Length: 230
Image (cartoon, rainbow, N blue to C red; front, side):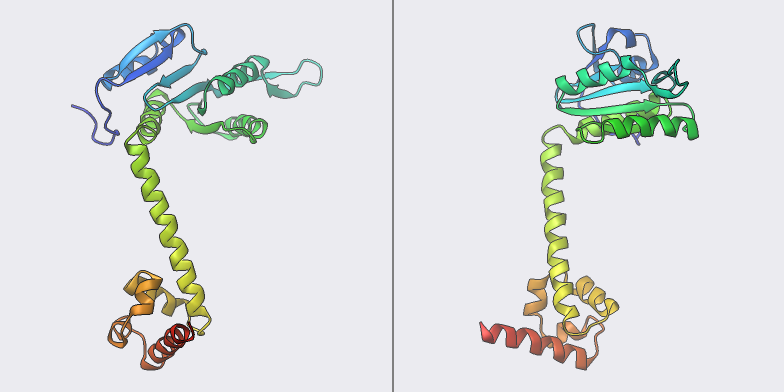
């Protein structure tokens, strides 16, 4: 029986992993999720690719990400890691790095920050994970969100949220000009929902928003005079 908390994945969804991961927990868990796992030595070591979503993940154990400089004794990112990340960014457009550590203490957070600072101006997204189970769950969630038609639906919903927020900001700014309090602005926003509904609202509808008569008259006069001037 599948775990209901896991995002649903169309079966069999293809996924490509590097051959070095073929006998790891990652491969086992991916197969348990009913994915069609293909092993390849032609991809970057530590890589998991979801072709349908066009997204790739690079799994990096934080304990293997740094070396100690023999000259000044400081900790720095290993050249092997740098070369692998650079190649990863060059090949894949949607890039995620899963930084794995059983415990994300101060040492692990320092390494995470070192990687983050180095690739801050790139399209590399970084996610801290504790184990393979958590990593696979993150990968499936992201891969599903980036796969059509879900990605289109999420994009439409996001645009709708942004549009609604802009309308609310304009409505709040207009009400602020009347000297309304934050509470009064909030009850109008909750009660009417948009600037267009506020402009067309009747006296009764405004009173239903728990506003006093003086405030309602002020709002009606403001928008009615604004319309008449047009």
